[in-house]
Length: 507
Image 1 (cartoon, helix red, strand yellow):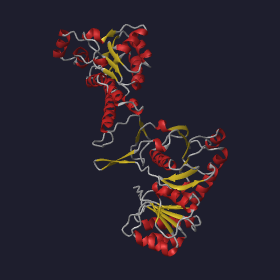
Image 2 (spheres, helix red, strand yellow):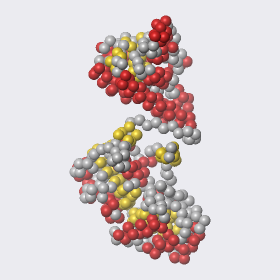
Image 3 (cartoon, one colour):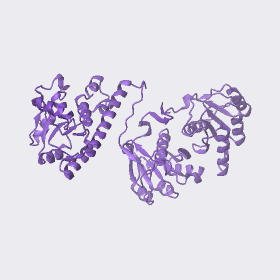
Image 4 (spheres, helix red, strand yellow):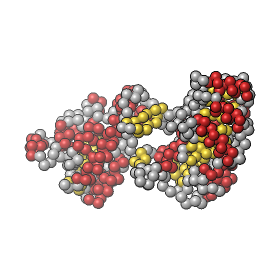
């Protein structure tokens, strides 16, 4: 059913963007009701505006906590226009008919993020605003609710194209958007009060981005989140579901490296990785490890990409490149491929949310992200032979890589470069065999390399296989009841082993 906008209640915290809306509504003959600062703003633009206090007969009380909470306001929003009983009561109590409600909410999340006091945060829990939103959305059959300035554009479109007349589907859409606002607001408040106790799970995500498809073309895919907060896309095609998975893995990996480093990822695992003095050198070293897997992968680095690096990187096909910055002449080279996605990373992976969620069965799994990074002080030498300084550097390098590799995982490294990895195997022995075979396939020398395992060795077979392949040093969490067997083999064969006490499973 079509409805004309005749009377508008406006009560907003943020006034920007209202000017054009007010101008059009005024020309279309609508009248305004408002409170406090919003009323002053409307009147400052030259429009007449009736105060809520005039209608209710009550002033704003309790320091502004109670302004709109009154039967004359909520009656005007909630009354059913076709209901005879409602119409009689509205007339009897002189309740105005409100057709459009424009309201926003106090900035609760922003106040929390600013580190404000508990008292300041509590005062940013909106009561009147949230009630107006729910009331108007409930009565979408008769009322339009605009619950955020994000909905100003569709409101303007309705006003301009339909001359302020809405149909049921228009109002239902605005109601849906309003409940999205209110549910997200309530989730944020609950999570503040829950203070990490995880007594219940309340998630709310706006900014839905439909993707071409999910992991496969027959699957629907959607990304919920603010991608632009983390990245600036400066070139290339639309980012896919699988791209996003790889990008997430890439930024998590590179965040754990402080030295100039570059990684090439495929299916969430690094197939090339090196730390070197320059990005160009890191690229050359990383690519040599597995140029076959690198084709069509994701490239990520923690330093600006210059022309020399871009020229070398541009020699193979890859889908996405991520860096904190690019020289102009480097961009000219990288943009030669029309569809290549080029991203500037604006926010370090360490600054992203520290909680991970995964849907499973008929529920959700929630855990803290694995942000643990071991340093030399965390290492416990458990063998007679101690690792050299360079071996310790490689062990720590390999330990970060294995943390970001799908389990069961083994990583072989040398000179701060990934030599090979075994990923996603059902046996740690199989993972090691896979890594050794891959290194040999690309004629990578294993002599003097180190080995990292994402979990302890239940038997000494892995250290024996690694030793015969030329591995001289091993890093692992430790904790097996049979640790002594692996340690004994190392002692008998001059292999050094360190334990970290930190397992890094990644299923």
